[in-house]
Image (tube, rainbow, N blue to C red; front, side):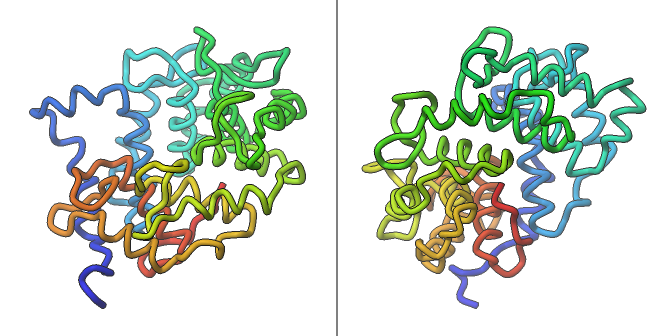
Amino acid sequence: MPAEMRLFVDEHVRYIQSLDTRKDELEYWLTEHLRLNGLYWGLTALHLLGHGDALSRQDVIDFALSCLHDCGGFGAAPGHDAHMLYTVSGVQILATLDAFDELEKRVPDGRQKIGRYIARLQDAETGTFAGDEWGEQDTRFLYGAFNALSLLGLLHLVDVDKAVAYIESCVNFDGGYGTSPGAETHSGQVFTCVSALAIAGRLDVVERDKLAAWLSERQLKNGGLNGRPEKQEDVCYSWWVMSSLATLDKLHWIDGEKLAAFILNCQDPEHGGFSDRPGDMVDVFHTVFAVAGLGLLKYPGVLEVDPV
C-alpha cells in the first residue's frame, strides 16, 4: 500500500492514550471545557480502530460520572455547569461502555434523572431545545436531545412531533438546514437535523435529492469536503457531510477514493492523530471524525459506522 494511503493505527492509539498525560502543558488546561467531549471523541476513535480497551473502562466511567450533576445534566469536567452538549457525551460514553447498569447502581434513578433534565430543556411552544438553563437554542441541541434520549430509551419524555415540525421550519431553498429558521444552510446543521429526523423515523419530510445534491457539492478538487460554499475543506466534514449522505442513501454521490486520500493525508504518521487539513496541528476532535469518515467509506482497519 502506498505510504499516503496507509492508516497508522498504532500511532493513533498511542496519541489518544497520551492525551490525559499532558497536564504540564498549558493547552491541557485551556481545553478543560472540552474534557468530557474529548473523552468521548477519543473513546469512539479507539473503538472504531478496534482498540476499545486501550483506555481503562473503569477510569472512563468514573470520570464521566464525576461530571454528572444532581439535576441530571453533565458538565464538561468536575465543577463545570451542566449543558446539553456535555450531557450527550456523558450518555454516549455510558452507552459505548454498556455502563447504564453501573449508572443505576451509583446514581439511583440515574437514567430517568438524565432524561428529565433533557426533557426540561425543550421549548413547549416551538419544540426545539435549549443548551442549558440560560436558554440558547440551536438545532445541535435538538439532535443531542434525541440522540441521548434514544440511547436511554426515553424519547417518549419529549414532544417528538413538535420537534420535527421545528426542524421542518428550518429548511432552506437548497433543501438544507441551519441553526434556526432562516439561518444559512451548514453541513454540521444538516447532520443534526437529518439525524434527528432519522431517530424520529421522519425522513419522509426531507427533500432527499435536493439536499444530497447540495451535500455532494461540498467536495473540492483535492477530495476534501467543506461545510458550506466557498469555504476551505476540513476533515471533520468527512463525517458531517458523509453521514448525512449515508442516511439519505446517497453516499455514492461523492468520490470516496479521493476523500479517503485526503483524510489519510491529514494524519501525523509519526505521533498519531489527524488535523483539519494536511500539515496542520492534530487534535482529538478531528481525529475521531477523520476515523469515522473512513468507517463510512469502509476503509480497511476501521469498523463500519452507523451514520446516525
